[in-house]
Image (cartoon, rainbow, N blue to C red):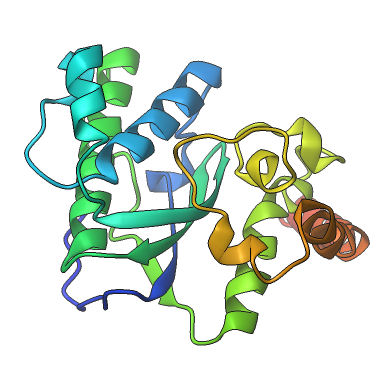
Length: 216
């Protein structure tokens, strides 16, 4: 992923997204999805560290004792793109984080599928969250992606998203959901907040699908 020249500020939240070059699939099966999530977890932490592919379990535990460059608030991985909501904690934290995950995942993907060259399409996009309202609505937008993409009809059946964490189905090291959940009474209220937009999201998906099918 190319280096960004616009500085990103500490203690601010950013919606980060990118897609596969030429809109190609970046995640072809569950192994790819799992690998990317492990890489996201690993490279949140600062400091010099072994290559992810060569690390031992003891070294991994030492990495997780380090301070973080960023906090991943929520995510959704789609077959040909990804969305992250990230809080920068250290100077250049997002730049370092995105460079490391892009390089690590591209090396893995190219080795596995016998290809060369860039996997992601140019520099990732990073949009700052300017209010609490924008923050929580973007989290909902991110979690609704599998519905809009017509991959599932029930978000609780899509495992490549932090929605599982938000509604209490799992609790993994990767995400800090408290930044969003603290605006709600708990997971059930957040679940309702997202679910209330299902019909709207499905309508958007149908319209998008019809437009695509109608193109020459």
